[in-house]
Amino acid sequence: MDISSPGKLSGDDKGATHRSPSSQRMIRVSAGGQLKNLTFYSNYGVGKIDVMAPGGDYGPNYDPVTKTGRDNTYLCLSSVPGGYAYYAGTSMAAPKTAALAGVIIAKYGKDKLKPAQVKHIIQSSADDVFKPGNDEKSGFGLINAVNALNY
Image (cartoon, rainbow, N blue to C red; front, side, top):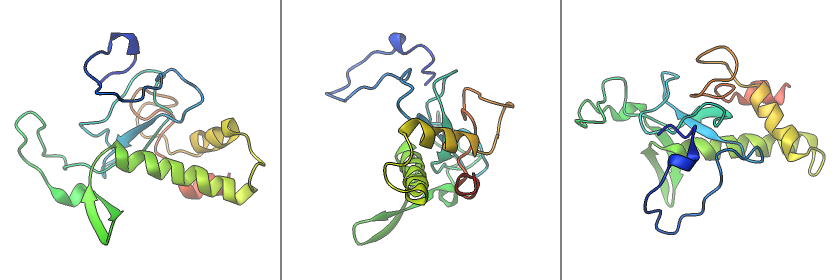
């Protein structure tokens, strides 16, 4: 869904907690596939996405309308109680970005960086994957932990 105009979004949210996609206090993450593509299920929007992170996908032949062509080898491996499983979703991408924030904080020491500085490191160290600079699908690009820790 294009979230460039969040005021146009509506529907039954069944009690979900909302945060404005315009908030600069958050790190807003889109989900990318193995082929460095925006996944079919990911939100996007001009000025609303900060970075993209691996989220798993159903492969390049998947058609979300007909639900055909699914290839599970493009999914992300995740820990689950008692082992591991393969999934796709922004629920795979967002924790990878949170983990990267955690290792950046660990590198510099607790309370040494402000949240905005952590966000800046994540954005500045990302691999630009679509249009040069900040774009509506990947923000500043695909997160890169090695670049972030060498920043």
